[in-house]
Amino acid sequence: MTTFRAFVTEKVGEKEYSSSIQNKNITDLPEGDVLVKVAYSSLNYKDALSALGKPGVTKNYPHTPGIDAAGVVVSSNTSDFKEGDEVIVTSYDLGMNTWGGFSEYIQVPSGWVIPKPAGISLKESMKMGTAGLTAAMSVYKLVDKVAPADGNILVTGATGGVGSIAIAILNKLGYSVITVTGKADKVAYLKSIGAVEVLSREEFLEGNQRPLLKPKFAGVIDTVGGEFLATAIKSTNPLGVVTCCGNASSFDLPINVFPFILRGVSLIGIDSQNFPRAERIVVWENIAKDWLPNTLDEITEEVDLDGLKAKIDTIIKGQLSGRILVKL
Image 1 (cartoon, rainbow, N blue to C red):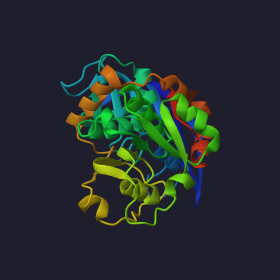
Image 2 (image 1 turned 45 degrees about the vertical axis):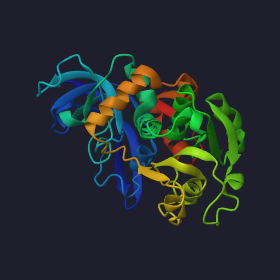
Image 3 (image 1 turned 180 degrees about the horizontal axis):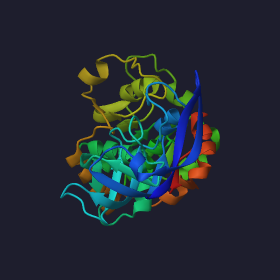
Image 4 (image 1 turned 180 degrees about the vertical axis):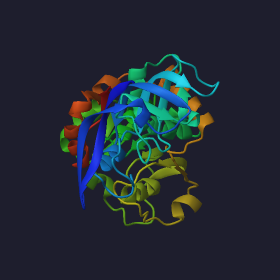
């Protein structure tokens, strides 16, 4: 019987959780159409919440987090995949209430599995992961409506995984990117991955109580929500496009209708968890063909399962920049 290692979080008290690396058997895995030997995963904020037992992500413990996985098919009950296929599995319920990617094997429904496109390695796909896919989804919704010649693109939450990769993709596609960050010590990092200007939070939010602000941005990729998203919308050019994919600042949106009815600004939500599979395949193909950032190595740090705990603490404290690749 095949045994393997997995990162397991257990409930040990009323509000107390503990994580450890445990040996598991294939028979421990949930039912699924496709068995995958995982080569790489990545660490996302949702994974950290799940590993710490925070409410709203995972309901039942013991649990193996990890909303990302890339690896090789071991067996499949469907004709869509065969042994030896290299595949990517991200989001849906992976690592939330279903056994996740912080494990040397996963077993999942075939509808969650994406064939890895040529032009990208398994390792590169997980350097991107859900954060990179979310960034690419945001770019995908932006590029058809906003061209590089139309003006600057704003990226908020710039030092996070989604923000960092969005900057890098936009830069590669020829866009001029302005960012917002509360971390003064990360200005050099943001410019190294493609930002032409870095605004402080105070500078960006100045005067944001007004119903409209001076138009500055042809498009926006917002990752934090709240007053940052509202300010970005008020500062968007006529017929500009704003994408929204996060709520780290707040899930409330203190906005009025003027940017929409006086400037024709479009607000597009990005749901990376349930993004349609057909479009998901297109976005991965775009990443593999033209969108893979040149600065991906600068954005990414690699750890193994044993190094996860320390990085989980770092991401919860808001001290993480870029991406964490998990090598299985």
